[in-house]
Image (cartoon, rainbow, N blue to C red):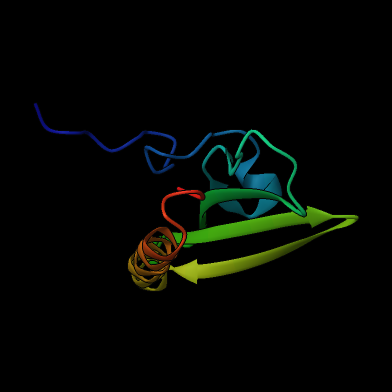
Length: 100
């Protein structure tokens, strides 16, 4: 069965709450939670301007007293995923699995 376009004009990943107010579509934030204390609280979400030709982007938001965001293209996020995997593999190989 084909996926039909959303009649609201929202991408299927959009939370559909306040798009017009924010001026962008936004997915629900995914918390980057390690279940232990960390220096920053980090969330990741998809965002996309309301313009029909706009492409989705990945927003990383960290909170430490004030919020700071970094918005990456899908291409940058894809490369970052591979770079992080390489770095994590290197860390795992040098620490005998203590941080994996």
